[in-house]
Length: 123
Image (cartoon, rainbow, N blue to C red; front, side, top):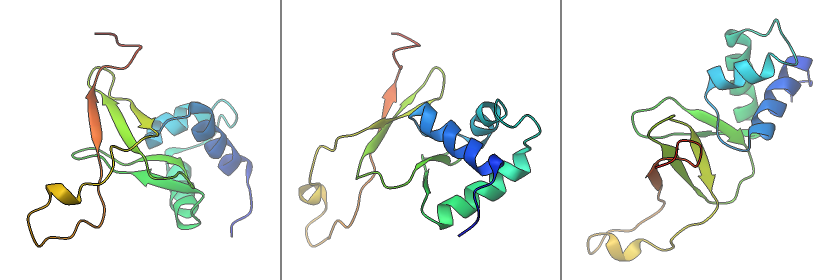
């Protein structure tokens, strides 16, 4: 386990404070408030280590760069705003998808992303 540096603490705090998955550049912008000299390379190195240690988990959306959120979330899904491109957690799941699979297939996992406009971007 790596030691807690001020850079790593700032990265973790930026993600925790946002309460939504963040892109590395969003993390950099927010963490620079606490550590002005923070670089994007340092953010990436810390993200890699924090994912390996399961402190963070990546969020993969089709055709997009990974975002990062705190680890330990229970199964959940995401909403992506088409106007501002931000991603938000949806702490719910519509349930079992086994009935949707072709006969003889076994569903092992699923991902669901909703798309639209967030409350900031309106309708």
